Length: 239
Image (cartoon, rainbow, N blue to C red; front, side, top):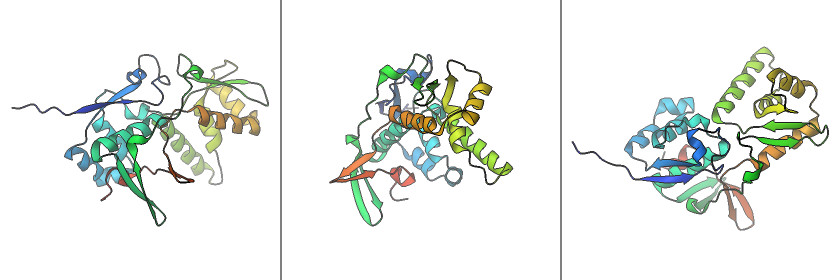
């Protein structure tokens, strides 16, 4: 029986792999992707995957040649391989509507945002001095697994108290791995719940956003800056 080989491309991760632990397969900073086939088109139209909201994860699982858990990807790296997957599947030109206006973008021109690698520790974490309290916090970037846990916890809190709003504190508890070099989770949670000033919380969240690696999904149309949407039609406009 003939063995068919798929053409592949190597994609550079915006994080350069530095946000993953030593020994993790994504630590190399690259990921090998194969070109999309009819099999992946079946995935994109799978009603079960669509209803569960997991169709893009299933697509990436099928396209990545490396033995990695897609849910380990931080948001910026996942965005980059989604764009690469779209180019490998349906080409670089992507048209979309915002309101009544249609835009067409050449996806191959998108660049990764500047990423200061000197800010990342050997463990893949970052440090920040809270401007009001002066406390040093160490934080990690969130993966898909973290995002799933956060959503589950927030929904759990809502079942206990429908009027509760815990998204900010819950996210910070997953971001922060130490406070003043103290890694005890109970201490971290107590600090966030009872001692973290609002100004420090906001400053930290803005800093996390500023240092997070990502692909720049902004399209400049004259003086207008447009955020390029990534959804199911990103891969198959005819759907």
